[in-house]
Length: 331
Image (cartoon, rainbow, N blue to C red; front, side, top):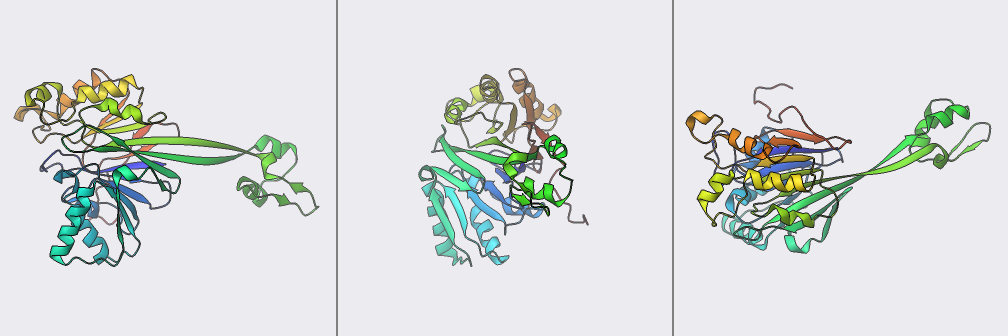
C-alpha cells in the first residue's frame, strides 16, 4: 500500500500553519520511503513524524526554486550526523547539484555516505524495488517535472474450495502453497502450487507534480493515474489578476484536467500564503475547494501539513491519522 505524508503545503514562503513544499511517499517495502521536494525546514517537519532519514531511499526535486530545494543541504548533513551510511540518490535538475556542491565546498560539509545526483531528464525509468518512477516535463518559469510512481504488486490467492475438495487440511501446507512452493505430503503425494494458487497483479500509479501552469501536460503519463498531487497556488480569479508571469495553476484548471482524464483521487497543495483558514481575514482556503468542486466530482482533498493518505487496493485514497507527533507524546 502506498502512503502519502505531506510535510509542506505552502507556496513560496512558509506560514504559521504551512511549511514550504515537501511530500513523503511511503513505499510497499517496510519503512522505505522517498521524498519529493525539500523546501527549507523539511528536516524539522520530519522530526515530528515517524519517518527516518536512515530509510530514505531517494529524493526527487521537481525544480530549482528555493521553496522546493533550500532544505536539501541541511537534511543531507543531518542524515550523516545521525549515522546514515547507505548511499542517497537525488534526482534533480543540474542546478540543484551545483547549489549543493557550492554549499558543501564552502562549509566543509562531509558525509559518511555517498550522495549521488542523477539529472532528472536522464533517469528514464528509475527503479525502487516494486516501484518504477518516470519524469514528465511541465510548464513553469524554470524547467519543472512531475514524477509518476508506479507500483506493481503480486497477490497469491489460495483456491480454498479446491483445497477442501482434495482433502488437503489447513495448516503449514497451505502457507507453503501460497508462497508458491510445491509440497510433498507424508504419504508421497506431490502438490503443485500452481494448481492451488491464483496469481493476480495490480498496479497503482501516483503522480506528484511540480509547479505547472498546464496540467494537461501530464497526459504524457502512460496508464491510468490513481492519484494526482498537484499545485493549486491560486483560484482562477487570483490567477487572472497575477497575469502571465507566475506560471502556476488554479484549482479550476487542475480539477478540470482531473475530471477530463477520469482521475479518481485529487490532492491539491502548494497554496498561496494569502489563503487563510477562514474568510474573515481575506481570501479563504475554502474558495479553492469550492472552485475545484465546481468542475470535479471525484475524491478531492486539500492537503494540510502532516496530512496522511493511503491508497487502498480498491484504488480509493483515504485519510489516516495525521503524521504529527507531539514532543510530549509517548506513543
